[in-house]
Image 1 (cartoon, rainbow, N blue to C red):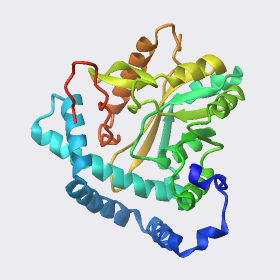
Image 2: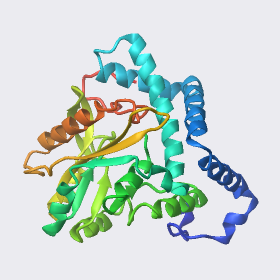
Image 3: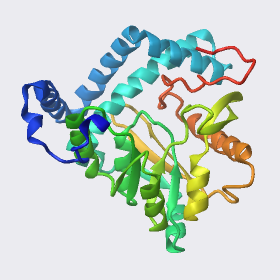
Image 4: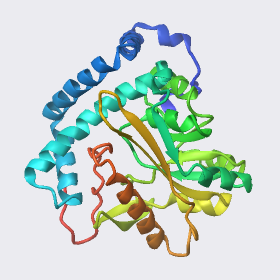
Length: 311
């Protein structure tokens, strides 16, 4: 955000009242109004928007279909089409769930269960920080909110290019997370881990081989980030897999948080083996609720030498 050097995360600026920002203010008011709608209207509207997005976001649709074809070869062509459409519907449902987490959090009361909380509390009781290895879930910040009902999570985030939008999102997230750590602030991330914090970190996107290694993901070579190995080594934190998902009737949904045991010998001396291990864990998690994942990202855009491009 070099073009907005004076801006500090979450800080209001009088320039945000200029006409060029009015569209964002109007959109925010509209979203707040959507948040107070009954869930019966919210999920129906989300389903309609999901169908629209699937139809018109052609590039994202093609990427989603291709990813599901590769990762779930047992699915028929019709199943891939159906599940790809559901990814977009779940994404839109996740937007409304996030609005509820930001503006109407009481909606989640009585809807959340958790399994494995002791894996976080035991590590923290021993003076360790906890690096929560998660995924880019379609639940978005709703996932963070349901976790915050049981423990205090921090989150790694990527700042928005628009400073007003960044301020608004930052302030909404401040009601959920203890700390928001810029993805470029490695020192801050390590400091929080050394201080015993639990930090949600998602190592499941393709950032090329400068930041990772090739490791199988659903049996397909994928560029896999390895920065978490350095974080764990320096901070002596525990690596704890985290997954959350929606289940049950969409008319009255429930949410479950699954926390697995801390990974032993992580990091090891083999970064490819570590990356493969984390990918395998993520794969098993995603099989629980396959469409509640951002499959519209190009997870396999980096290809090994001699391999054909996927997208």
